[in-house]
Image 1 (tube, helix red, strand yellow):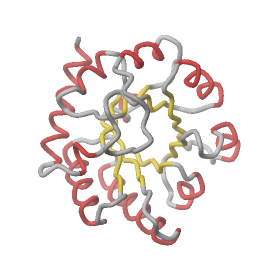
Image 2: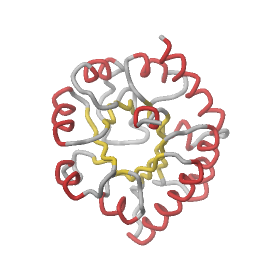
Image 3: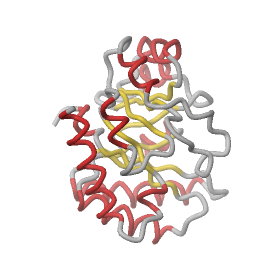
Length: 215
């Protein structure tokens, strides 16, 4: 499975404001249903030791299903936890520096909301881009930008060669629009982590991906 395929359903396991057991219960069921990538995200006011413990525990869960495991923001934690990759935002370690420091094979993701930023990150050596916010992401990220719509995927996709993952307010109902715009994958947070039946949501996302790929 190549990187584009492995990014198809990208679950952000956000521990912020959630109990560990709730997050990991949802992740376990989502993985069994076909999630292809899991990202550890954690803005909780906890110690580095707690973050490492959570990140390693999540890595073991992900490894059982052979999915891709990414750590958000923290390059050093990604290395410590044995992650497959790290996703770096605009205020994190510069991707070009991360690429020089990274062990061979480490996947590096970046966040872009414009063609200019996407080209800059591709030049810096990132392997994929999280593009958004596609729809309204403010319930998850208080500093999220205004929704740009699926059109931004199409615009950026014309200029870069690396895979694009749409993020921001994505659900099973609107994911098809993102795939039809040219995204390799969709990133989801609340729609899966907070779902009563995460596996059912993942199944619907996979169906949306299949429909979008055929259109």
